[in-house]
Length: 67
Image 1 (cartoon, helix red, strand yellow):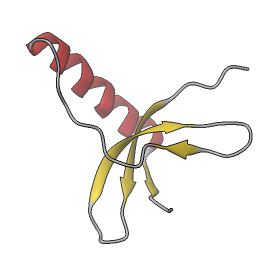
Image 2 (spheres, one colour):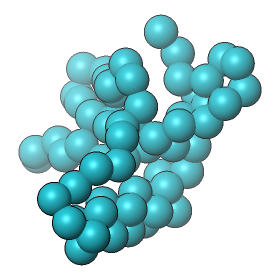
Image 3 (spheres, rainbow, N blue to C red):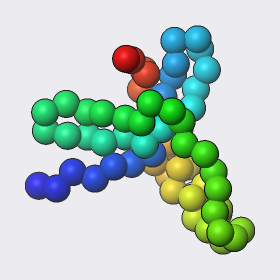
Image 4 (spheres, rainbow, N blue to C red):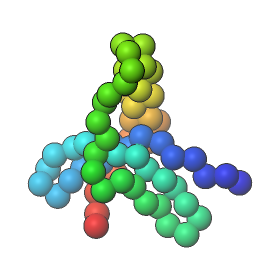
C-alpha cells in the first residue's frame, strides 16, 4: 500500500500549534521540521491549499511535535 503525505496540525513544546507536512511510513512517521507556509500563484491556488489544510486538520486532528 502506498503511503501519502497530508497536512498535520502539530503542537510544539512551547505550546504553539502549526501545520506541517506529515508522512506516515511503514517504518515510522516523519514530518517537516518547519511548518508550511501558505503561498500560491493566485487566489484560487491559495484557497485550495487552505481548504486541504482544514480538511486534513479535521481528519487527522493534532499530534505532538517531537524531535
